[in-house]
Length: 526
Image (tube, rainbow, N blue to C red):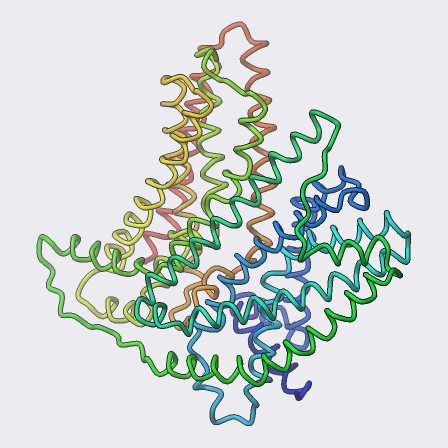
């Protein structure tokens, strides 16, 4: 391997994975530290993920519970594999850029190593809980030395996991079934990815509630493949631990050579064949008739047939609300007897739900960029750009609204929200979805990317995942404070009907101001 080549390729792939962030850094004059700046952003996202998962494990004394240690290893390994599956499919099998490297003096192994390093940074937030698990277990068992052993064990585990995951994914991609039914197989694999992440989050939520309520914990059965790591952290100098550590080192070396000699050549052959497929820009002669709008809707429907797009949209939109749902259900919250005087709260809840579900990976935030080169073709047609973009926006808004309304109805049924209050929640959700979809639609216009080769380039535009987490926590804090203030007004002011009417009028006025702003500063300028 050539470390200098790997470093250069890693920088290129990292910058290429987030072109908008790269452009912003260049505009600020930070041309010398672009890679460092992006690495810092990925690191911040990983640090934000630590309390989301890692703090849930502090209640368990893992040196005394090998069953729970091995279970959490298996659980987080499944969740990380789910994310790695999506990342490897996107970065390797959908980028289709391997032909671009053929004229350049780069070895295949170095190209793959650089791309794998980018994959590691993509899955790093999901590896952080494992780092906490190994660190806490080692420190509680053997102090500072145990903490060091935990770090060594984590890196060994992560390397083994990445090599095995890549081998498994490559084996699946090479299979005849995958090659014959490529789209269906890819959809199934990405569905497994989404289900694995949801299942892990929901289990952790329920498990933490049980521990807090009972105060007692019975150990689970051990998962034998992960037991050597627990032995290594708790009793590192036993014969079993030393033998296991030596065995894993030998296994890691063997997997490395198998990977470089067998897996990489096969992957390169598949990827080279994939990259030969050229994108054909279909320029159909479209006549403007009374059905022209319908034709554009059918065209937009064809843009969203990609299974990767749907899995990323569903995962990115609903992972946070669904992760919070088990906690709400286990708390015994029942809104069936809530008084009608609290009606004004529910439009706010509906708008807040829209804030949680619409983000960088939602359809409104990429519907224009999905056109690729076709966008320039449509601009050349004898029609107003305003008309074309309005059709696209209303299409994306309708798709997003259907998804949000389904989620709102499911949550309302589970929490037994009265019909009159449900009406307010749905109104608020429609308003929220429209305004936030409009915001991300305009954002897509400003960050327009028509030359993308992998969907991850569209998801990571702007501040990427860091922006999503900031909005998530800001929404929780802001909505909580606002709802608390409204409840206080309704309780302490003797005329709740007046309070509700005033809040509804204020909400309507705010919506009007926002719509006027976008009409003046966006639609009228097209």
